[in-house]
Each structure stands twice: as structure tokens, then as C-alpha cells.
Length: 320
Ligand code: ECH
Image (cartoon, rainbow, N blue to C red; front, side, top):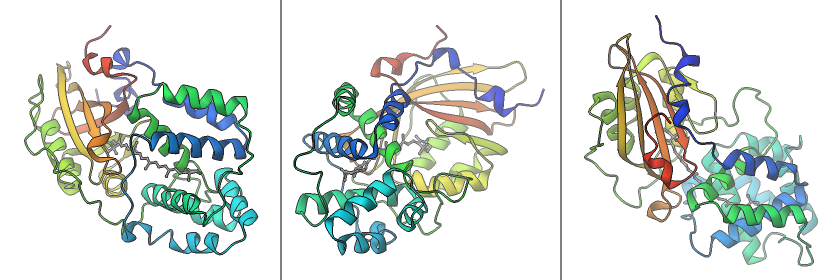
């Protein structure tokens, strides 16, 4: 029987623990826009006491420069309004410009605005701002999350902003995405306890050297990659574009895995481990799992990347 995407998505589902991230984002979405901006400001500055993102270089800021320059030249009430428009996905020129940014340009844009806010160049959160109960509760629950989950909440809120005219995908994937410089060299030799599958080991090695051609060559023609909290991306070309835009400079450190053979000659594997983003380098390790379905020809038919609910889940490989 031919493998299907729908059945591939369910592999190892009984070992999965629901992540607290979607629930946190749902609470965030219920806040009004001023509370959302205030929440992000307080969450980001609180987080900044222990971890701060690497400053985006000029190359990464080039696409955002036009919009940042416009904001800088506005009087403060207008600056606040532009931030509100972007955060509330209003149909305005700035909202449209922002929506067309890649994920990393969106993050770089807000990084720069945060610096401008600290320097007084851009309107800060109003000094008399009274935190609502909703913001207070959300801040408290975000503090219970681990750092990898906290940066995922920040990232996912930023990604969802702007007025997207293309119904298709949340961000466009510019082909000229600037390179991310690795702060630490990626691990070169991959050894995963319980896993010898060449496609899986080859995948991690290729990703750790940003060799996306080699990585996609390991996929079946109609292979699919499902990023955390997203729909699967199907086909080598689409996967490669996605990787070039969003997977550069990641350090993947898989630790252990389980391999199960299936009757039709395919194999399913679950691997758990740590991933570091170039935004935070070695300072934040995200606990994740990869669920691979390898077809009878040894090609990747499907891989899902899931954020784990807790470090305990790193050991959660068998059916409960
Ligand atoms: C201020 C106030 C106003 C509003 C806003 C503000 C600024 C906020 C800022 C936030 C910056 C946040 C950042 C977050 C970065 C997060 C990065 C993450 C990366 C996760 C990557 C993973 C990769 C997984 C994958 C694997 C694969 O095998 C395939 C590919 C892929 C304060 C001004 C908004 C500045 C910088 C979470 C998990 C493993 C799927 C990619």
C-alpha cells in the first residue's frame, strides 16, 4: 500500500505530549493590541536578563531598512500606531510590507525597534501603562516555560503579524536570504543511540553544514517536512526554499532514537535531542523530536519536527 501523508502524520502520535505553546499563543491572541505589545515588551526585556539574541547584521536588516527608516522619522504617536497596525494585522502599507518579510527579517525588524525603543528613538510602552490582568497572567505563565519555549512563543507571535495578501503562506521566501554566521561550529559527526538509518544520519549531517541540496536529496519526490505547529511542506523544491529561509545556522544535536520496521518495508523512527538557533547560540537549547517515515527505498517520505513539552519527554520514545 502506498504511503500517505495523512497516515505519516500520525506516526508515534501516542508518544506525543501536547506542548504548552499553542495554548499560550491562544491567550496572547485574546489580548487587545496595546496589551499584546506591552506583553511582548515585558516578556522580551525580562528574558533579556538571562538570554539576549545576537544582533542581526546589516545584511539581515537590509530588507527592513525602508520601513525602519520611515518609522524613525515619524512623530511618536504615529510610531505607536504603526506598531499597532503591524501587530493587529491591519491592512495598511506598513502591515503589507511587514507581511512580505521573511521570518528572520521580521525578527530582525523587531529586534531593531526594541533597540530604538530602549534608546528613545521610537515611542516606548507609555510610562503610565497599567498592566491588565490578562497581560499579568500571561507573563506569569510564560515564566513557567523553559527558555526554548519562551523564544518560540516570541517568534511565533512575530511571525503571525502583518497583513498578508498572499493567502498561501505566512511569509515569502526570498531567495537572497543572507547567511547566518554560526556562533559555534556545528557538531560534525552524528551518532544517535538506537539509530543507524543512513537517511536520518545523513539528514542531520547535511543540516548541520547548511547543505540543503544534500538534505533534500534524501527525500522522496513527494516527500514532506512538517515544521513545529505548521502544515507539511511537500516536495523537494518547496522544502529546499523553506530550509534556505528558516533552517540556516541551526545546530542539531540528536541524542537518542527508536527505529521500527513496518510490514510494507518502510521504517518509522523517532529521534529526540536539542536544537540551537543562531539567534541565541549555545545559550538556548530547544528540546525537540523528529518523527521520520522512511520509504522502502530508504528515502525520507515524511519528517515532522515537534517541540517537546518538557525535557522529560526526551526519553519518551516508546508507546505509552
Ligand atoms: C519588542 C516590543 C514590541 C513587540 C515586539 C518586540 C520584540 C521582540 C523580539 C523578539 C525576538 C525573538 C527571537 C526569537 C527566535 C526564536 C527562534 C526559534 C527557532 C527555532 C528553530 C527550530 C528549528 C527546527 C527545524 C529542524 C529541522 O530539522 C528542519 C527545519 C526546522 C520587545 C520590541 C515583537 C525582538 C529572535 C524558536 C525549532 C530541527 C523546522 C527549521
